[in-house]
Image 1 (tube, helix red, strand yellow):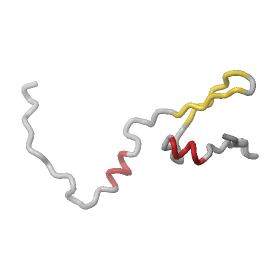
Image 2 (cartoon, rainbow, N blue to C red):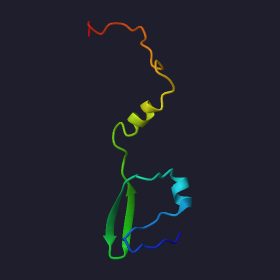
Image 3 (cartoon, rainbow, N blue to C red):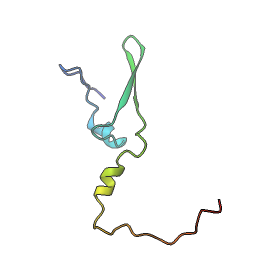
Image 4 (tube, rainbow, N blue to C red):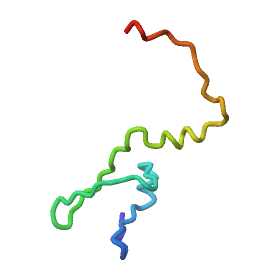
Length: 76
């Protein structure tokens, strides 16, 4: 697929590639220079717990999370 570099030095990933690989705005990548004119783009792994706060804020109602009975861990 063809793309180009903008005047700001940005490269746009074509929409087909973004859809195929579920690439969303804000995702980070590393660019590796292999040799002159050859580069490799590698998606960075998401940060641990990335998006958890947003997920929690989307919970439907107050009281959505309720305590459950569990065994004690004192004997461990």
